[in-house]
Each structure stands twice: as C-alpha cells, then as structure tokens.
Image (cartoon, rainbow over all chains, first blue to last red; front, side, top):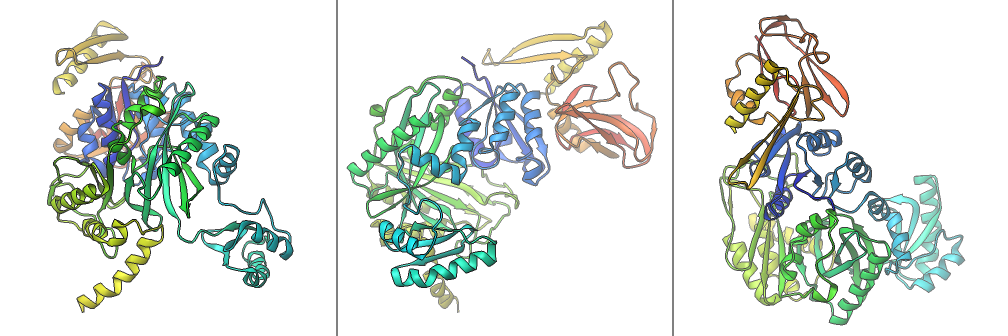
Length: 457
Length: 142
C-alpha cells in the first residue's frame, strides 16, 4: 500500500490551508506552491516547505502544470492535492501526475473525463439510474414531432438549438399555441446564428432548488453517500450560502435519493470525493452535473457528520478502505456556510486591498476557514472569497440564531465584504421559512436595489 | 533553517574536496518528530534534489546590490553547460547582453538564463545543481 508522507498542495487561499491542516493532523509533511503575488500568503507560512512556481497570473503559476510537477518532484512529495478550481478537474494533468510516479488525491482521469464534462455526464447519469431533466431523445424533426414530445414531457418546455449555448438559441413555451409559433422562429434563428437548425426539447423547471449529495468511494468498491446540501442561494451561478441538511426534504425523499446516488456511484466505480448536483422541484430531482473534486461547501457536511473529508480523500488515495459504512453515517444537527467575499455587498464590485483588522468570530459551533490575517493584502487577480464562516447547532432555528451571532462578531476592517448581505439574508423570512429557489437571490437583489438608491438620495 | 543551509553547503564543499559524488545524510530534529533527509549528488541533480534554497533567497533578497538575473522557472540550476565542463561565468568575468550565465532544467528541457545587461559578475548565488524557484536571483551583475 503506497504511503503518503509528503503532500504538495496545488492551490492557494483557504482551501490550501484546509488541506495543510488535514495533513498536519495526520503527521504528513506539506509543500505549498505560490505565485509571486502570494509571497506573504498564509498557505506559504503554514506549509513545511514552499516553492514559488511562477508570476502572478494563474496561467503561469497555479495552472502551470510543468512548474507544479517539477516542484513536486524536486521536493520529493509523494502526492498532489489539487483543492478545488485550478487543476482539480484536468484529466490530462492527473495522468501526468501518475506518469511521474506521484499519487493524485482525487478521482482518476477516466472518472473526470466521464463525469466532469456535462454532455458525457448526462449520458453516464442516465446509464447509472440518476433522474435527469426529461427531454426529447435527440433532434426534433418537425412541428408535429415537437407537439408530440411536449405532450409527453409536459408544459412548460424549453426548445433549444443543439449548437446553441450561453443562453442563446433557446425559447420557453407554455402551451401548444406558443410552441407552434416559436418552433419555426427558433429553427430559423439557429440556422442563421449557428449554421445548424437542429433543435431539441427539455422540460423547463420554473423554480428549482439546488440540492447536492456528497460521495466518497474507495478503490475497493465501497461507496458512501452523505446527506444533502441545499445551495439554492446563488448569484450568477455562484453559491452564496449553503446548508446541510436541506430542510425542505422529507426523510423519505432523502433516503430514496441517498440510495439512488449510492447505486449510481457504485455502478460508475467512483473513487475519492465527488458531488452529485441536482435541481429539485415539486418533489422531484433532476441531475444537473457532477463535480469530480472536493467542493467549497464541504465543511457543512463535515460539521453535521463529524467526518474530515480531506483526511478521507488522503486515506483513499493511499489505497486504504473506507473506515465506515452507510449505516454508520449519522447526521447531527444543522450547519450553514457563509461565503465572505471581498466585494461591495450591494454592487458586488471586487474590493481587494489591505485588511487593517481581522478578528474572526469564535465560540461553540463556529468554524472559520480563511487564509486572511491582519495586515494581509488581498491580491486583485484571484478569487474574491476571503473566508468561509461555518456554523453548526442542534437544529436549523438554533443554527440561524448562532449564525447571526457569529456574523455580528466577525470583524474585517479596511476592505468591503459581503457580511452585511449575509446578515440581511439570514433576517429574511423567505430564507428562514425555506421559500427560496435558485432564482430567489437575484430577484431579491434586484428588488433591493431601488430601495437603497432611494435612501441614498 | 540557516544551519540547515550551512550544513548542505559544508557537505557540498566537503564532497568536492573528497571527490564524493553522492552522500546521504539523515538528521533528526524535534525529538524525531520529523526527519530532514538530505541527499546530495554531484551528477544528476534532478534525481537527487538538494532541496530548495528558499532561505538563501530570503537572506539575499534585501542584501542584493546590483542587477540580479533571476530564474525563469522552477527547476534545477546548472552553472556549466555539462557536468565537469568549465562554468559559464565566474565572479569577476565581464558579460554582455545575451550571454548565457546559467541553465535551468525543468521537465528535461534546459532553459538558458541570459544576461540582459552588460557588466561584471559580482556574485553567484546558487551552487551547481541547486533546485531553484521561479524568480529566484541566480547571478548578480554589476
């Protein structure tokens, strides 16, 4: 069984710290890599060794595959942990790492190719029994074909150009009349816009929530599924606040989905950490995508289940077996995660600069994952997330109370952060009563805006 | 860490004097909580890294007076075109723009560090076969 004695962390910020901490807890030595803009970064200070791998721009440093591989080889690291983002889902890089005799702490290259790509992933998901958004199986020939599919799927439906993307070449229709009118238009549009008038159809979800299930699998065919995270509060597809469990679900819905996900993960022989993401509407789940890596919001699962997911990733990568079964995963209480970004809380304009005072909240049930410190200058070229506040309590209402307390305590001076927005969200009755969906936050923000302008006038 | 660097340097010198090409040194620090394993090789530095001269950089960064030629990448620095050959430059040599002063090897490719100024070599900050980081000063020109 390969032993991991030294891990190179191919990332920066809070996630690099997260991995360094798990390694230190296990007695594993760590190597940080950094760009010239991150000479004073916390991950460089906390790691046993550090290697500057390139200039400020990520493409030349944190995404510089050969520099990172060279650093790993020269420091005699046994394994590479990619964190999230950067190189974490690059199958070709995973292969290079393994070709150089190093261990990759994450799913293998085949799994990343199979599930990391959206089109491949949907096919695999169907094969593995995951529910997907119902749609026409392939191209729609003509209007009769379209009407027939729409009846089968149920209105409202979305007509989409096969060659389209990024919101272009699609139209929502709510009944047969609208479909008759829209079909030739979209067909003509896609012919001129994409040079291809192949259309297909999918069910239109009007108010979906984002609910996801954490997977852990080992190299011996064992798989466990952790209870779900609700990440419906999003702005521009970026999650803002996450919680575990999704209080909107019944126990039966939860148990059924855990079973379905477990069978799917087993069927695809999933190894290491991953997440099945779904849209949830009117009691039904629809597969969205799979993340073949550790996720930003993994701490809410850790708090509720009392398991260190990064430690498990390292153990699995070293060839060890999962130390527990599905039955031994018992959730306790409720957890929230708040992403604190260095941004204006109203305009969301990034606000890099020097932190004059950093005093994170503390106390029972409060965890802060952050690479910030007093005197730290946030570089402008990387992600604006500077801290994750994670709060755990015995129930959702108790967790809301504790989260308010923790957000009140959190002091960051010198830069603007999204803490005021997080406080506002936690005070909102829709958020408290679970009356939100994936579009709720954007609507809330657009309604908020005129009000704040009035006040400032 | 300074003593670690000093150890490596002393060992390196000793090896040169005695004609030893490889040396294994194990030192226990902090009551055996971790081991600093030094493997010095005078032949193939990629296979036998000396460890990054991070401390060296931090010590010298402030002290450098003159124009530093820096490593363009993570890799292993060589001061001569091949093992045993005459070094590209030594202290006191004059260099012109475009002269190669060292090589950095990464992923089996050799990348020359060329001078971008005319001047005299004032200092050579790394020894042959040292692992170097991106942006690390290698040679100082005055």
